[in-house]
Image (cartoon, rainbow, N blue to C red; front, top):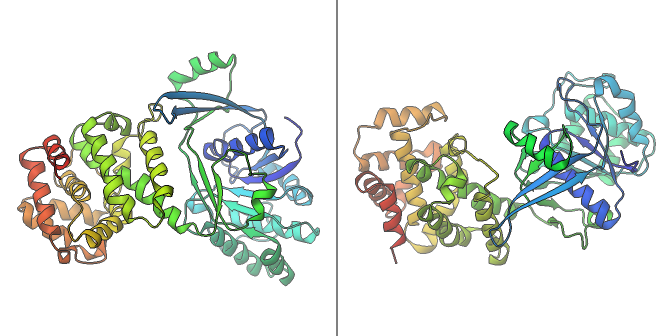
Length: 460
């Protein structure tokens, strides 16, 4: 390893952090002189993967601003050690005394930031991630160490306060020194973050041989990812100086409020998937990339983002249009084989979360239903009434379509729009929506998906 000072402690050894945080630290070391080393903590000793003990290659593949395929190799040597706490507990505890260690990053999945009443202070190690972290932070406090920036990357809203609350749970469960809570409040910064990058992980078996031949040797830790990256961090302005972000060229941004950016990601990236998937499946496509090579579908998605989603989001256009353009390039990335059937999982909860807010906003603004979002809604209903793939969703949603599949399109539309449990209201009360949805269902049935897309594109 490169012998760097330990400045960052990372909980989680999965491929996402290796293709996300490690990439940024590596670049900040090389471009900005951060000189930061990372120690990785395995969240569980059940993992059978070898401990990381050598530099590895990160392969970034995707499309550039001109739509041309690009491929960049990056050597990652900022990881200094990986700890398995079943074997390295004391080494982990002793890291609390590292004076230059200033950052803690985690990605232990959404289930990682959970608490229990069974972990004990004397466990070596405790079972849960927050208990391990609380034990380590108390050691840091007891040694008179400086506070830290905690940057959870788990995909839950307000992940900073969630992590802090979990640590405080164990501090109180274990009756730790009240001064420890004050130290957490005054000296430590639990920052909410929003992460965005597709890290596909290790290369496939058929790719590994040619890629390692290109490298000139085997690399068991190789990771593949897309070039696009975004790391938004709420609060803590001093963090920019400590991480030497100014002039780095990295899309790491400190913001006062993550909520509008979360709406941007959910509406454009996630929502773009949700409106594309049912129509693409009805046309017989298998992956997002295949679907975006379909000129009719691509034009549909582009128009939906520009005309029906962007105007409904709570950010200025200059913060939305570039993100939308990047989203469309990401959808077309030939190196990411994102299967439509996988994205179709739990389509109805996704539609309600990702697209319904924009549908309601656009309807309220224009006085009429947004035609492309309504067609995506109709296509999703058609997919559920006459499944062409194995659908996975809440039983009540699947059962409803089985029970009502013989009804007319009009009755089907009105019945599904009346689902208050899903929508939070009876959508039949929106002027013209039931009629527009019925028309979309009829078009898909009578003229087919391709012609329905052509007809919607021809509308003034």
